[in-house]
Image 1 (cartoon, rainbow, N blue to C red):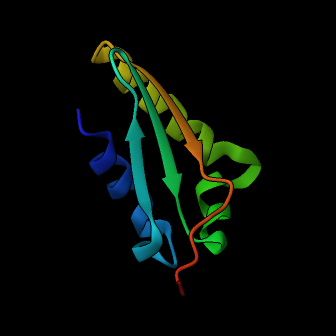
Image 2 (tube, rainbow, N blue to C red):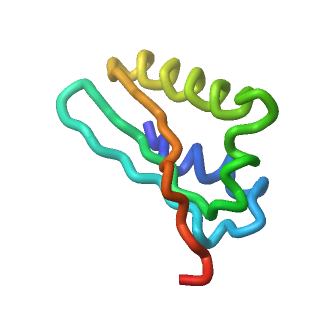
Length: 85
């Protein structure tokens, strides 16, 4: 199960600054924490209207994790990544 590639394939086409997008996976054992980093201007696109996009992404990641016997949590980085840096 390659959640990094999946999230990259789903989210990157939506972004104005895809070069600033990255996925960080951490955790051990049966737990995985996924942190999405994106340009501040792209955060709204990842969150979606009324939070529907991020909620859907969390559901997909949790379901994929369950199929692999993992507990998966997905979060969007609060800081954002500046594409100009």
